[in-house]
Length: 394
Image (cartoon, rainbow, N blue to C red; front, side, top):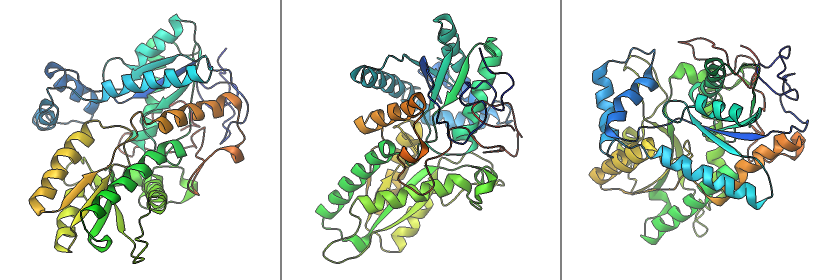
C-alpha cells in the first residue's frame, strides 16, 4: 500500500519521511531504467523533437535545424540502442550476483515511454520500483525533470496509489561512474605524449551539456550555497579534479601540471538567454591562439555516446580541431563499462540493504548525494514547480 500521508509523494514507506539518506532496507521488486529517448528513423525525428520541446514555443524552423543532426545519422539516435545494451548488461550483472530484480526500461521523450514501463510493472504485479535515471548530476533537466515525469506517468496511467517509486542518488562521484573517465583520460594523455606533445602544450577540456544559467543557479538545495553555477557546475568541477589527480596528469620528469577546465556544449536557448559558458568550440579557438597543440576532450557530463556526443563532440569539435591544426582526442563515456554497470547495481543495493551513509562510496567531498531530493531542489525558474516524486515538495 502506497504511503499517502508521508512527506514524499509516491515513495516507499522507508523514504516517505524525507530523510536525506534512507538507511532502512527496502524490498524492491523491480528496477526502472529511465532515459531521455531518441528517434529510430527519419519519420520519428520531428515528432520526437516536438516531444522534447513541448510547451517551450520553439518554432518549426529551429526544430528543422536540430533535426539535421539526427538526419546525418539516418534519423536514428544511438541512445535507444545504448539503453538496450545497458539494460542487458544490468540484467547480466544482477544474475551474476544472484539478485532477482527485473529491469524495466522507459523513456521521457520517445518509445518505450516511462508510462509504458509503469503499465508493464503493474501488469506483472511489480509495485515497488527503484529508478535509475541515466544522468549523473543535479539540475532541472538531469534530475528534477525525471522526477516530474515519474509523477506525470503515474498520473496518466492511473497508477497513483498503486506503484511506489524511489530513485537512486545522483551518482556523479560514485567510483563506478568516475573510473571509466579516469581510464579514458589516462589513455588519452598517454596517446598525446606518444606523439611527442609536451604537457605544457596539452589541455584537457571536460565537456558537459550547457543549461540556462538560472537553472544552474537553482540546481541542488539552496542550503548548500553553491553560487552562480549551482550544484551542477560544482559537481562537474569536483569530479574533474578527481579524474585529473587519478590519471597522472602531472609529468613526472618535469612536474608540469597539465591544465584543464570545464567547458559546455549543445546550447539550445535563444541568444538573449544566458547559458553556461564557454562553449567548447569557442574555447578551443582561444586555446589555439594561446599555443595549445593537443586537446583531450572528456565528455564528463554524459553516460553514453548519444547524439550530443556523436554530433557536438565527434563531429563539430573534431572539425574545429582540424581547422585549427590541433591534435584532439575524445575519451569514452561509461556506456557499458563493467565498473559503471556494477556501480549502478551497487547504488540499487544501497537502498535494498539500507546501507549506512558512512559506508557509501563517494570520490568528492560533495557526496554521497541525497536519496530523497531536498525541498525546492533544481527549480526550473521559467516553468515553476510541478509535482515530482522522490523528493520533498515543492
